[in-house]
Image (tube, helix red, strand yellow):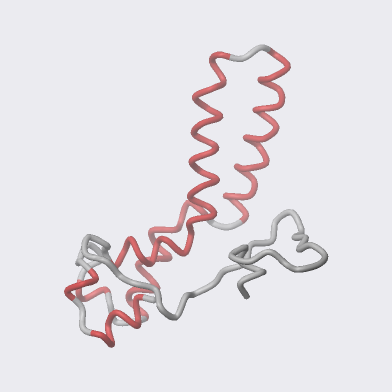
Length: 127
């Protein structure tokens, strides 16, 4: 798994991924730190999509200061990102987080509750 997640380099060969493939890894020794909320930890499962949104916002900021050739490239990238976000229901992430929290019995604690205030069993559910 360390090679798949990029923590180690393979001795031979290389790891190649298809364009839209993302691997997830849940560290068994992950630490929940003070200041992290239930909702924030659950939402972090969507970090790859949130990073795409950030890139989309960067592109939008650049559009006013580009020539027509750059604008065409940026618009193409923007369209690709928008399609991917739509495909993965990006705009319903908050509802998905709430649904998962409800299913795990965490919604009663509140999504803004600090994870360090939870019991060990409750923290395990957050992971």
